[in-house]
Image (cartoon, rainbow, N blue to C red; front, side, top):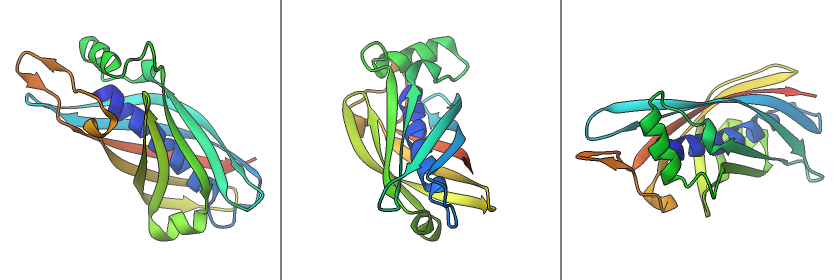
Length: 186
């Protein structure tokens, strides 16, 4: 379960990166940055959290002015600090056949994202793709960079994932993902 939450976080991070690139005033046709992704979930026993090592992102402006980009999160990079739980998460995500979680952002306008506080993107976990909307907060911007947070929840069932179980302990369906985005014009 942690793996799929982490994957969703990665996808949201990708979307956030695209929105940041579209920040009001941005004029460069390419933006680079980094994403810091964390996730949290609950089980019948306790709450737990995990993270993904920082990811580099690149976002490009299209001919119509909208920004687009992809974020790939290696499933093997998802971690909760407990080896057995991480193994179960990777098995649930079928890391051998589907080694990446992907977030895709297309034709985003930074003014719209900033004004609405919503960052839409497509999240793909294994072979299931769903539309997701992240809530954007803590927007900070100057003439060369933008920083913001994006948060969203992922339902394991919506991605055809079955949460791991160990004896009577079961992970809940919802995973909360937080992405800290930092972007700078090239």
